[in-house]
Length: 303
Image (cartoon, rainbow, N blue to C red; front, side, top):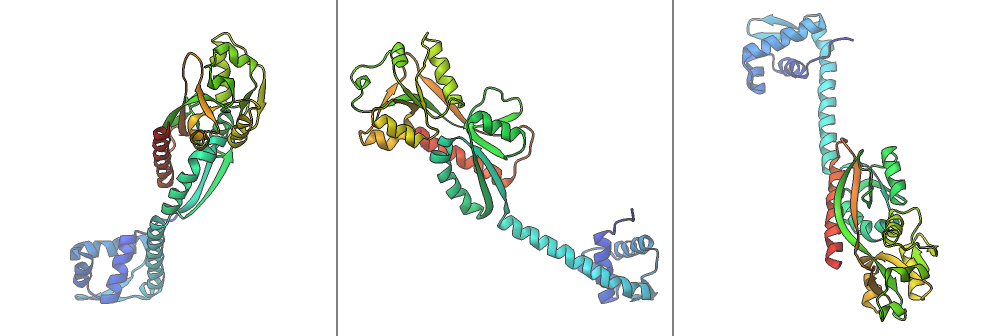
């Protein structure tokens, strides 16, 4: 490969060609006359030709010098344009952000995050890929998404998990449900139809394990994949929804649903934003993570 031209030497050549004096070139570039002379000699050696005729303190372009001047000026213009373009990019970054998230995250957490994110990165394209926690982690590992917002998975060996907030799973029931009068025992859950988002979700696995540890096997479920649909069925008394209270804040405040703690112990979940371990994060991604944490603080105030 040919030697790459030194941009400092090219700049010294263009300035010298314009003013015709080593001393004036040195003053303009804040270099000594000797440094300018060495730069021109090095450039001539690199190009294999003489660029200037030297007549006392004055210099004039040779035929090769006049030919090279056009190229040198184009080089400097291109470099200046690149610098300007990058500066503009820093002021108004462009790019793409691919987010994997659960249904609850996409409905309750991300809208406020995206609204604030777009204020700082209006030219960014955002793609949201919904799915349960295991699915989003698999997509992240396969580089199909840039980060995920989900529950903290059990296997984090390939992930950087950035904490967002913690919540607690509860029963959400109609105000007419008997459990509003008599708090349920673990065995009572076996006789109920539980309304859940998905059997493939990490929340479902946590609930199932929670009751199995208490000797209770849950058998009757309605899978809906939507928190809004879960709440509607619970309000109608068709079953008992299992969800976090913050997802039904308005319905609980309006008296349409009642939140009842799970029997014997709390079942807490940890929400995180996941990125691949060791992968440097862009400014946009770091900003997104910070906004997720701020959204998490607001959720915990509600909790």
